[in-house]
Image 1 (cartoon, rainbow, N blue to C red):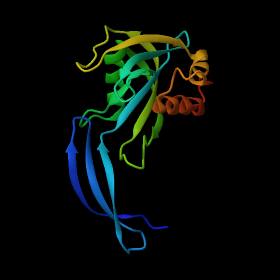
Image 2: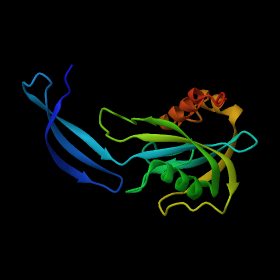
Image 3: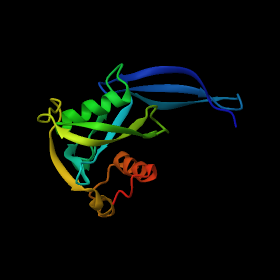
Image 4: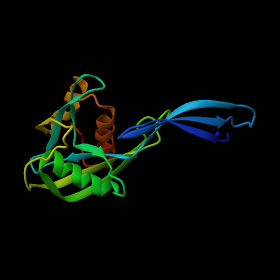
Length: 182
């Protein structure tokens, strides 16, 4: 199978965290083309931060897309020019007030490949130490929570953890071999 070939793109909207493009692709067989919408977005990160008592640092925050609260792990966008691990360190510090001595890269996923072009990287942070208070961005408001690692699977099954990228992060954690995420 051959890939589709990008022919042209038109910027529909430029936003703070993504751009919306209308892109025309040539069909793989070279006959005809189709228009698609593509969300051009910067990469994201998630951090599974586990303390010495096998508890996960989490945040509860309001999400405007679903107009409800979610229970998540620290995460966010990679700033321009920032490597994913740098972003993970920054987000952990901003959202929890913690830093970590040990970091493991658990890999990345495509958040929504039919329409988005970015990746979400997941990192495992251990050897946690509090270095200050959380410093949320001006457009963020969240509540910190500490959840026993053994409770994570139950919280997923009870639909209290529903963010797809957080679910993917915990699955990658299980595959990494640090034990069960619950």
